[in-house]
Length: 389
Image 1 (cartoon, rainbow, N blue to C red):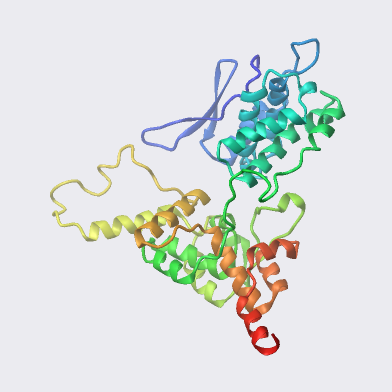
Image 2 (tube, rainbow, N blue to C red; image 1 turned 120 degrees about the horizontal axis):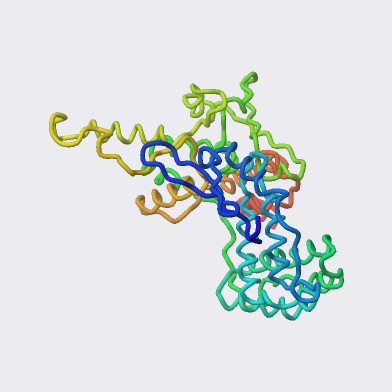
């Protein structure tokens, strides 16, 4: 491959069949199979891995920031992947940070990029109105680019050591926008939203509220991942957020949650429990049942669907979240997202069973993280105050 740009994993749309994936390498179009399938992504990774030319630097062997970024993004595209071949969400954040770094300092020599330059870029992020937490995270990602360059002996270690001295912005010590902490969502708000959701999505919300699982763990639930041998079912996700750290994750499913989940288990063992096409089929059936025009007149079901969206076999976290946001708006209640259900569950468990139990339910290794999710019960403090205060 002659170009320094990573070839794109592309989609070829088909009018009647599933879309196909392909990649162009040196002007040659190579077909990969069904778009989005693990097989096509593995083939894509094989084609682009190990076939990149060695990075050469234009200015006397001293790399610019742009040249470092090209090499780092090639590395990140391989490193930040889930075991199933999907790119991790972190890769998107890295690309965002790299884009800004390239625009502001792309032509600077990497060896000359110091703390003052990084702080100047940080100030521009502040001026853009980004939140303090997001700015700190992006500045850390920019510094990681130079740390990687030190590992690869592309620049000296003094560059990264100097950048590491740039401290995070502190709350109340900068003009960066502060975001409100994530709070538990009120159960009454959830109930009002459920009335505006399709049956499948409503059951997903109920199940997440009962188990405290992450949205991604809920969307990828399969019958083969659930041990139903005991009174309490145990769900072990195929992949989860902290698996790259060597952490295990087991989600307990009690009787109430089992009654919801049971009707979604009558499918192939490796199929996803909650599927958009099931929800769409129910919607179309209800629409057809309410049809006023005689079936002998007008369009018949399925004859006017050319080029329309086809529901798939798995809910994406983004589509699950968007459905809840829209349903909440229709119900006239506050804006909320499925992640807040974990906060609701954590607070409930902490109140009834203590912090250790909440930590176990949420799957945290540290109780300090659980305390961010599980709010303190002020009523207990009030009770103490009445007794001895």
